[in-house]
Figure 1: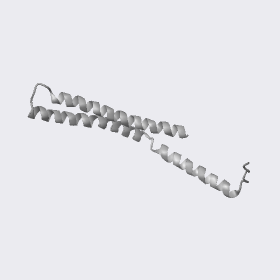
Figure 2 (figure 1 turned 180 degrees about the horizontal axis):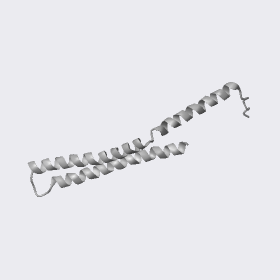
Figure 3 (figure 1 turned 180 degrees about the vertical axis):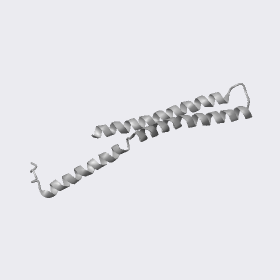
Figure 4 (figure 1 turned 90 degrees about the horizontal axis):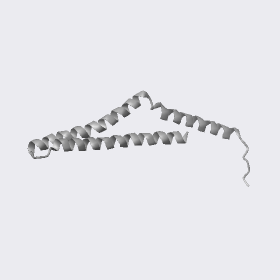
Length: 107
């Protein structure tokens, strides 16, 4: 059988220190969830779609100029870049969503 340990002043103090540290960590995690971090996330998602789309388009235009043919490389690579960008954006949003859900479960 386990014996109940007597509560000492030292044990109470260590519990208070632990609770204070936990509150500070909780506050630090939630301090970053401001309007600016939300706008930053929107910017990240936007750029993660725009950059592959623009790079695909630029490469497609170059290929069309240097290797003309019956198919449009510009359209193909624009569409491919857009699809890649959307998958990339979904990855970032899903990752952020999982972190938020984990944080809520720990609370």
